[in-house]
Image (tube, rainbow, N blue to C red; front, side):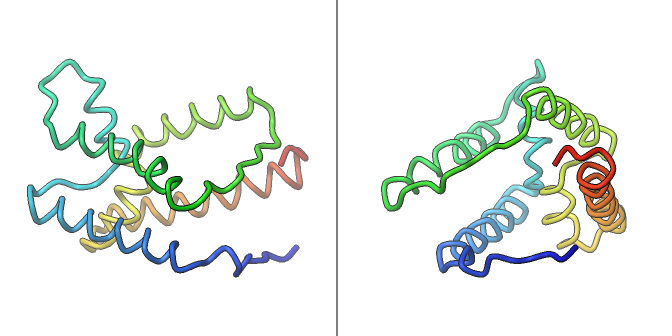
Length: 145
C-alpha cells in the first residue's frame, strides 16, 4: 500500500486559508487569552451558562466563510461513499474522544502544539496513531473504507 498526495489540490488559496487560520488563532490567544479549540467553543454555546459574543462570532465565521468563498469560486465537490450509520458512529466516537481528550484536533494540534504543551503533543500523537490504526482496520480487516 502506498500513500499518494494529490499535489494539484495544494493551491495558493489553500495557503491563504492556512495563514488565515494561524492569524485568527494568534489574535484569539493574544487578544483575549483564549484557545481556538472548535469543540470547546461549540460545546460552550450548548451549556446553560453565559455565552460570550466572541464564541458566537467564531462559530458564525465557520459557517459563513464557505458561503463567502463560494462567491469567488465554486465549492469543491464532496462525495461521501459510506453508510449513514457508519458516519453517525464515527461522529459519536469523535465527540466522545474530544471530551475524553479534553479538546479536539484543532485545539491540541494547532494551538496546544504551538504553545509547546506536552499534553497537546501527546494528544496529537494519539490522534494520528489511532487514525492510522482505524483506517488500517477499516480497510484491511473489515473492508469498510
